[in-house]
Image (cartoon, rainbow, N blue to C red):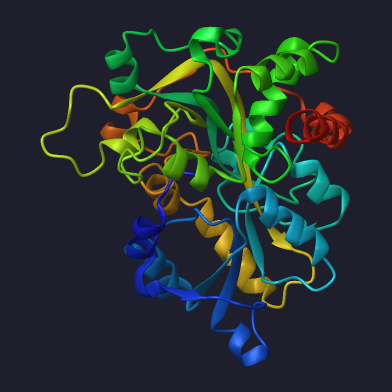
Length: 356
C-alpha cells in the first residue's frame, strides 16, 4: 500500500537493497546470489529484516520499482513472457484478476499460509499469489484545517458531494493507482450500476481533483501531510485508514491524536499479494523470498514500514499502529469475481466521465 515517503524509503531500505534495473540475473551465477523483487514505489522494509533474509538464505534482495501499484501491475502483464524479476509484490484485489488472467504468476504455496485467515486466501488462483497485507482505502482529513474553518469533516461518500466540501478533495487516477481504483469501486458498490456515474458527476461538479498516484495526492496536494510540509491546499485525500500513524512517527512527545483523521464511512477493503513470476530465473530464491514475506519477522515489520496490517493472524501489531490507526467497522467489500468482470468497463466509463 502507498504510505511511505521517498526520503524515508531510502533510509529504511539501506545497503541491503540493491538498485535493480533488470531481471533476476543475467546468468546462473548471479541468480544464485540475488533475488529480484518487482514492486511499487512505496515498498519498504527494515534494513535489519532484509539483512536477516540474506544471512539465512544467502540471497541479497534487488528491488525494481515500477511506479504506483497500477502501473507496476501493467508492466508485469506486458513483460509476462520475459519477467523483470523473480517475485512481484503489490498486486491487490482490485487488480488481481487481470494478473491471474494473463498468466503472470506460477503456483507456489508459501510457508506460513495456514496462519492467514481463510477470507484473505480466497481467489488466489490455486496459490498463484500469497496474501501479504491488508488495509482499508479511505478518505483522510486534515484536522487543523477543519478546526480552523469550523467545519465538521465528512463522514460518508454522500458528504463528499455536498457544497460544504467543494474543492477540498483530491483522489488518484483509477486507471493508474490502486487507491484511486479502490475508491472508484467503493462508489460502484455503494451506489450500484445505475447510480455510481451520477455520483461522480456530483463529485466533479463539486471540484474533485484527480492526480496520477498516491505519492502526488498525499505528499503534494494534501494539506495534512508532514512530508509535504503543509504546501498542499486540499484538506481531503484518498489514502488509508492506517495513514494517521505516519504523521506521528518519530514525534516526541507523542500527541494525544494524529493530526489527520479518517472518514470511516468512505472505506474500501484492500488486500495486497505477492507471487512467483512465471519464467523467473531464480525460482528457488523467489520461493524463499515468498516464504520470508509471509514469515513473522517481515510481517511484524510491515505496520511501521508500509503502514498496513499483516496478513498473518498471529503477527503482533505495534502500539503506535493500533493507537493512531483507524478501524473501519463496515468497509465496502466487493467480490473478486465482480471486480474482474466489471473493472475495465468501470475504469473506461470513469475516465470518460471525470478526466475528459
